[in-house]
Length: 445
Ligand SMILES: O=C(O)C1=C[C@@H](OP(=O)(O)O)[C@@H](O)[C@H](O)C1
Ligand SMILES: C=C(OP(=O)(O)O)C(=O)O
Image (cartoon, rainbow, N blue to C red):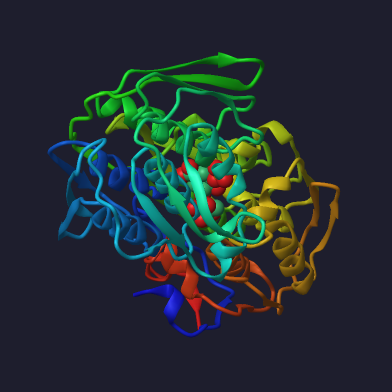
């Protein structure tokens, strides 16, 4: 299903009995995008197991095809990519249309910027509003040229890459794995060394995959919370199998649903517990959540665990700004947990939430207010005063999957049903959200 071409579909969540059972959410979205990209750049067959078949990743798969890869689906989650090879991408004829996918579009800009080709990038109404200068600025230092762009450096835009990207040392202006990854992916085809410095470490899937596919890449501490990543250009990237763990950002929805719904006891299997993605687990545990990590193991180079969550009496906490990169996509669902917690939760330093699929800071506050939850935005902080949640509200999702799923979870434990104006965007990251939640006992109408 192509979520961007289906009409909006409202959906309500109703108070549910206890949630029980075991589930496995789909594959991680960040890793799945990167499977397609590294598959495109490597020589040979990249076999992928557990790929997220969400709309965002399918867009990246399509772009990889347009740039010369052969991409084949064998069975659900089981895919192969035969790469064009680093330095040998095809000139795409049609626009690369990334739909709703920030990650796919921005990482692929890095790939195109490092090749002597011209590509037109576009996306849906949400993606067209998102800032791209943060990607285009470093890529210009590396030698790429923006031939056309919409106002403010936005999509649609036309990017001309360079046959020989310049080696750069780039310090990212905000903690962003997308900026870091775009620079590194462009630097792959540079005859020299590319260095990215981030003051606060962001998710490291690109670095891990670079090493997995044979590049020489190092990552060392930088300052109190940062990293310095150094990549040697022009490696021979060789196809390697990839096993995709379950997405912690998707697992967050059944997790919080169980914590706030009385009597619940669930297990979420195979969840990636990479420390750079685990800020939500830390925060919920600080709030008093009954969460245990069982059967901890390594799957495909990532830490994974089965996460057991039981209904808990939560208390408000202060969430420090430096934790934001490790839980950046989880603030909408954390705000829902905070609405059911006793006392005040203050989430600090959320400016990046304003430039996601929607202005998430505003969308969260509006959704909470519509459902009778007391909250404020103070500067870049969100303050939620929790307790019992009246519900009964209608929530505007602004083409944002995480806003839709978060408020549907709220409806499972609120006194009255919660309605979101459009559930279609959920297909971008978690196409099985509804059946998975219903399997645990959730009710939607
Ligand atoms: O690199 C990635 O896979 C992602 C990075 C994050 O974005 P930023 O780099 O903009 O923080 C995150 O919000 C997004 O969902 C996925
Ligand atoms: C921000 C997100 O994704 P992207 O930037 O890839 O659109 C997300 O999935 O919450």
